[in-house]
Length: 110
Image (cartoon, rainbow, N blue to C red):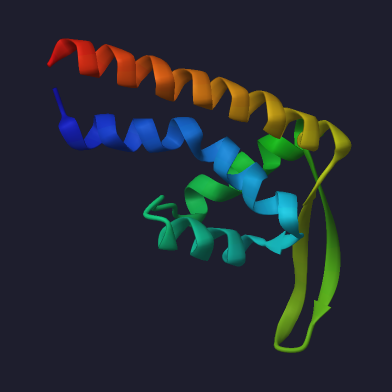
């Protein structure tokens, strides 16, 4: 068993919830999302984030707009759609149930 791979897969499993939650409060540029995730120890590289953002957009959970930048090319800002806001609620409920189940299972195993 590759423990590092297992830990990375666990983080990837909750990445969608984390991204949607970050966008719940305000729109964000991809590099801002990466910074927030890194600061929370959810290590993400652009090669992981961009396909995920595209998948969330194609699922109509996110939308984006272009904004001119004072320091370079236009930037793509992501925001939640109404469907994305509903998805956060469902994913959060599922996450809480999963955390509870894991805590019960691991507590009983000790």
